[in-house]
Length: 202
Image (cartoon, rainbow, N blue to C red; front, side, top):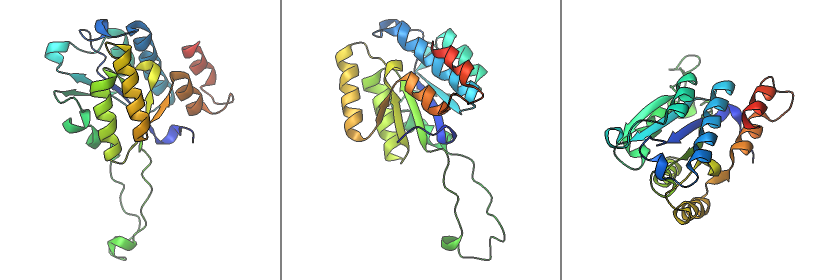
């Protein structure tokens, strides 16, 4: 199973100014988060980001915030570790589509429902074993398909980060990398955005 561009939404968790210096491999992790935000902007993937207790941990690091704003990403400030507890799942729901035809002509259970196009969540963030993990597991409970971008995630220790990945994989989350996301969203070298996207990850 490959990622589908049309059904994807990007969610980036807690890349904040007072948190990132304590994260393992923080420079590389932020660089990959920036690439994900740039890809979302380039390919018109809806994007969201969270900030945990921003008055205490600061706002999103500037180089990432710039790209998220360029991609018109929506922000969710939170105190709960799981962003779902603060309303993320509702933010990710597409607006309801009007019923086609005469709504009174058929009982509700017989009316044709369009498939929900936005149930795939590409997720990355910090800390992997706390806010990312709890958000991912809660999104699964809300029946989203969750794909965690491992090279854009971190914790203060590699042991905590890796334990999070093991637990997420066991729960049914797909583990991917930034380049996997890019090339699965593109699918072909003939995609109009291929050269621009390729330049972002080289």
